[in-house]
Every structure is written in structure tokens, then in C-alpha cells.
Picture (tube, each protein chain N blue to C red):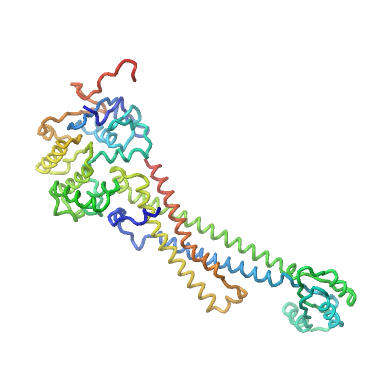
Length: 236
Length: 289
């Protein structure tokens, strides 16, 4: 199966500090569901940043959607970012814009005409159960509602890869289950999903999901299932 | 080309509403006001210098240092000279009146030697040497001098003042540009969150830049037009209401071309501010990540 993302001996450090990620060597298969887990400070958020192209590795190579992007120019990255949906723990909604406009933003950034925005956004808001809250601004929404708006924004462009950083961290258990339902539904439609979480219960309730475990910036993968296949001799 | 200026309402909302107390339009307005006044002064000075220069271009003076009892003969000789289009003697009373401004009552003393003076205009190609020789045949000390030589220091000063005005316009434009750079960087800091969100969903630097470019273009347009209108009102007051304006400008006025130049200045300032904002934002975005 094709790889959505491929990490090859990737390391990351911020400034002159110690490496927060070391020797990451794995691939994410297209259409799979992954949980990224590990203790606080293990490097989960840093790994996600590499995945959604908010950060460049300090060493190693990263390929996304079959393209080597480690040294890609700054201007080459936006088209790849549009193929990735990101859900943050703190939602990152623009406070002075309505839920509708927040969800519509990726379409508008991608250059969609107004008439091509209305329908999909309404549909997406209905999908996350917020059809009647379209004109509400984020400060007037509950945590769960804001997270659902953030999810709607992340998936409005039908991303090939969905990355969620502790998406259930700020919502109650019932809402967490509901959000996970949205993720699995999206996964069934073919989107590769990577969810960073501490919540073991959540992991256990998602059959078929694979686990990526980080500890001290390195990948703990006893089964070897996530590692790259061995390279032919002589190839780097 | 100007698509960035006419964007849909939701995109306009990305940076939130502009506060009326936002400093950028006010700073630009002050710059525009100053630039307009200084530019108008520079253009008026250029016109004054032009009028003066044209008026004295063909004008000469025949001076007899010891005074002239034979002024009428001299005047007749000058008028009869080839190439002289007009000539008139300056009455002694007028000379003494002029001297009186410096010497006071002493200027009326008969012991004070007052030179005789005849102003005359010539056509191009007139032989000034021949005119001087004719005059010297009547009054040996007579000599011809060009008015432009006497007025040269004044014209030089006027030219210098025009350059000073031009330099000030450039300096103020540079100051406006610097203010725009600061405003753009401030706006980037204020909207860092929105920028991060936009980058995260795949916006290009140019798309982000267009948001700020548009905001600053509108601020700059409002400010520069406001400043220009205020400057126009002041200029109108000076040229129509204030009596000393005539004294200051020597009756120099602004021509149609000058008015067009002045009308274009606010637009030029807007274009400058917009371009500077674009460059500053693009550079800051590239430095930031």
C-alpha cells in the first residue's frame, strides 16, 4: 500500500537545544488509522509539526504523498499543506469570524468561488452537528462545539492526511467519543488519520488502529510494523 | 493586478475591523499634509523664479555713476540704438526714495551723488557693446549691466529652496514609508495567530501578504486623501484670504500642471505605502519561519 508519509532517520532540534526527536524511521500507509502516544515531552507535538509541515527536520529526510519535501522551497509547501487537515487541542479558530467562515477558510484559501463554498460548508457543519450554529463566533461556542468546528475546518478540503493533536483533551468523554466517531468515519472514506493522545481508553475503542509510541524523542516500535522496509544494498 | 484589493467580505474579516483610532491613517495624513504644503511651496517658488527669470531675461540697465545732467540725451541715444525695444529712465526722486530705505533722511541730501539709471529691453542679438559705446560718447562713465546678474543671487536662492522643498518631500515620503514598515510589522505581530492558521491550511505568503497590503493601502489612501484635503484648504486660505501670501509669493500662482502634480501626490503616497507594506510583510514572513 502506498505511503502517505515516510520518515527516514529524521531528527529535530529547536535552536541549539538537544534533539527532541531522534532517528525516526517509519512510514504511514495510505488509508490507515494511527494513534501517536507517549508520555508528556516525548515529542508527539514535534512529530506532528513535521507531519503537517510546520517544521523542517534538522536531519534526515521526509516524504509526503510521494514527494521528498525536506529541502523543498517555502513556496512549494502550501499545496502540500492543503492536502493535510490539522486539528489542534486548543482549536485555533479565528475568534472574530463565524463558525461558517472558519470552516470555509481552507476553501477560500484554495481559491474556491463563493458559490462553491456555501454548500460544502453547510454540509460539513451539519456533519459535525453544528448546522444551527453557523453564524456563531468561537467565543460563544462550548469547547466541544469549537473542537467540532475545528474538525470541520480540517476536513472541508477532503484531506488525504488528517493530523489531530490531543483533539479530545479539552472535551468530556461523551464528546470525545463523538469526535472519534467523526475521525473513524473520515478514515472509512479513505483519509489517513493520525491522532496524538494520552487516552488509552480511546485507543482501545478504535479497532484496527495502529500505535506509534514515542519515548524521549525516539520511536518505540517493538513489532517493527511501522519501520521502513529494508533498503537494497548500496542504497542510502 | 488589483484583485487583492477587491476581495470577498469574509476575507476582509480575517484581520478584523480597523479601529478609527488606528495610528497609521493619522500618521499618513500628517505626512500627506506636510508633503502637499511643501510641494506646493516648491512649485510656487519654481513659478516665481520662472516668472522673474523671464521678466528680466532681456532687461538691462545703463548706469552713470556720477549722475546725469544729460539724462534725456542718454535716453534718446539708448532708444535710438538698434535692437532696443523699449527704454525708460528711472527718475532721481525714485532713486532717492529707494536709497531712503537704507539711508533715511540723508538720502535727500543734494551732496549725495545719485547715479543716473536707464532700464531698457533688447531683442535677441542686440549689440550691447555698441549701446554702451553710444552712451559713453555722452557720459564717459556709463556702463551697461544685465538685470539677471543683479538678480542671480535671488534666483540661486529660489532654486536652492526648490531643491530643499524637493528634499523635504523625499524625506517625508521616506518617513511615511518607515512608518508603514513599523505599522506592517506591528500588524504582523498582532495577527500572528491568524497568519499561523492561514499558513497551516495552505495559504501562501503572497495570500497572507495581500491581506495586510490591502489593509495598509486603504489606511494609506484614507490618510493621504485626508491630509491632502486639509493641505488644500490651507493653500486656498493662504492664496485667497491672507494678504501676506501675495507678498510672500510675489503673486506666483500654481498652474494646471502644478495642480495635477499636487493631486497625484496623495495617490503616489498611497502607492508607495502599499508597495512598502508588501515588501515589508513578505520579508517579515520569510524571516519568521
